[in-house]
Length: 86
Image (tube, rainbow, N blue to C red; front, side):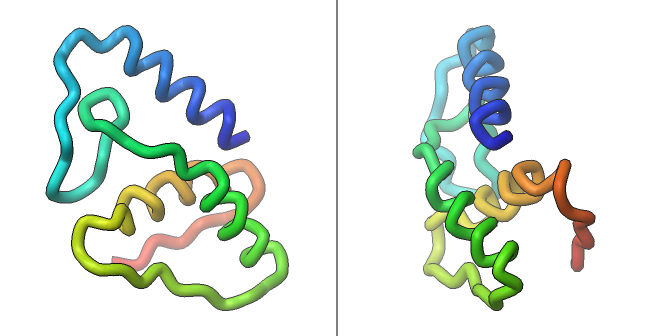
């Protein structure tokens, strides 16, 4: 599932003509910003969720917390109901 998401994102990136930039604020968008592959991280988080374990996403500024949560929401879309807290 996450591999499909990444393939879709890569295809969007390939069709996007604007030069990518390093994002220093907010959510990273793969067609606009340079991003690292976090598939393994998402699989580890999903395993914690499957095991009904508690976890936190706790890092300093500019470590991809918002982007990770956004991709996690999409990664879990077919399998879990999601509730967003604001």
